[in-house]
Image 1 (cartoon, rainbow, N blue to C red):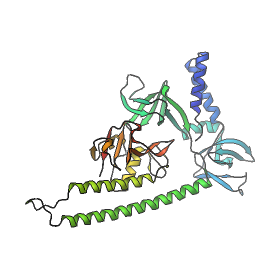
Image 2: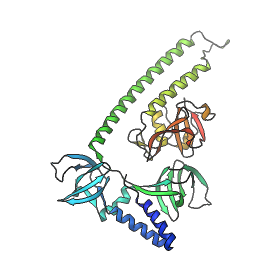
Image 3: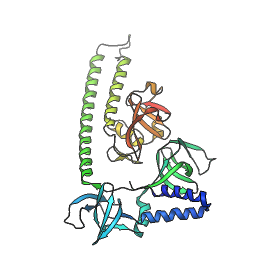
Image 4: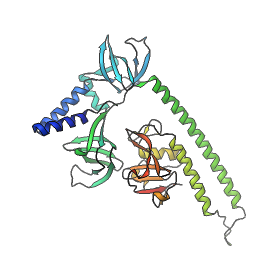
Length: 360
């Protein structure tokens, strides 16, 4: 992503304040001025879908990538109605008529960029109001990336799973992230990955359907002639349920691990194009016919409680403050972590779990 502007400004402004004792108004003016200077150097696509990034400044030249609507590149030079840009791994030319730069980019950039607050302290308290006296509504770990909704003097309003709250400006690094161009190779790799994931999902669903049918048939055979004393009711030993639950949990684990490396998107539910933490577990379980809430707080009440990580099985939900993950065994989880890391595998104790829930 394009380098965060405000994080650089914050560091610069802090140094100036320490040496020159500038007042807050001057520092705010400096931050705004630096934002404007950096945004002026952006090239932002304004099209219905995408504009080709070409190797040379003419329409007959080879396309080396695509700059999608509101995606951003860095201006390098202008030549005959074309802008030469660098965006992600792509360097080439876009037609100027399909993009904005300079003052127009300064105006558009805050609207198309995503303001991010990256936590710089071990555990950051998220409060209900912009005050140290306000109630704590959640805890966020170091390096967690939060979407900024509003910036106030000394405080930043952010989104977490419990809702919107405030964090102190002293414990976050602010930056602005933009979507960048996609090269031909990246597009081909993405499409191939999506196709493979779709095929794998179909195979997993078919395998699970077969397993369910076999389990049902097994139960039907096992139930014949087995009754509790005088009741006339069929029964199945308790250990059979444990085996079935474990088998289903492993199927959930295997399915979820296919999506490691895919992006994190706040509010998203797409396992391929972007999802947040609760959207990830929701979409994984949806593949197995289970409906879960799109809320990490809501996930803390689904299924049955498990007595800690020591008793967790693959497929269990591991719930944290403002976060939820899937247990995969061996003390590890798979989860949609942050916009920087995407979907990853982590140690389950990287934060203190609030609860473990078993859905099956």
